[in-house]
Image (cartoon, rainbow, N blue to C red; front, top):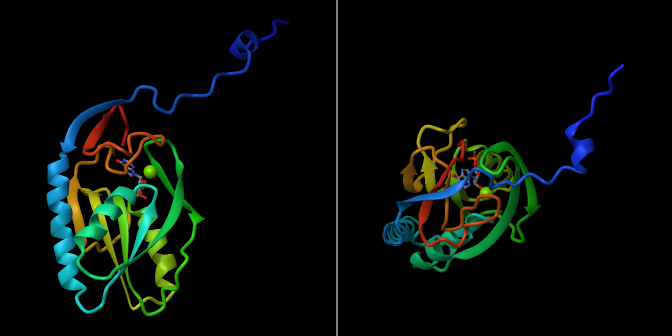
Length: 197
Ligand code: IMP
Ligand code: MG
């Protein structure tokens, strides 16, 4: 009888797979200037819509931290801020829709005007999950502001009154968005080449 000899036997323990293998930084999709202008517009809209009832901004970490910093300064109202950290299971470029809350809120939402600040909506599963959890805490109102929305990718019906840009279904990085935790600090938004999004 011939014994099968596996590659692992020959080479020792397998090396950890590189999550960035086959991926490279592609072209700029949204420039720094375009982001600046759009964030200012969103800030004006929110300032107008929330006059007399300053919102509690809830940033979804980690992706929304850059957008939240700029957007909050474009809103001319005494806003409060809190953050939630979520991590979704999946590969480097594809969410599974199963979300784990890594850091919950510190504040009470009862009777507050809550505005969720998110970096990007793809399937919409992450936001849908978060929104359900926040709605159960009886806020006075609950809306969403997302910097990016991937056109026609949503698997759930989410009404999002504040959207920065609608983009094609490519995988993008920069301005808070990552692939395998890198590129969040790029000032513009770029396409990740080689990603199956
Ligand atoms: P959804 O649950 O499919 O809507 O995915 C939303 C989450 O997946 C976002 O909060 C991001 O963390 C991540 N995500 C989705 N698309 C991209 C992308 O193109 N670049 C970086 N992260 C993304
Ligand atoms: Mg992410």
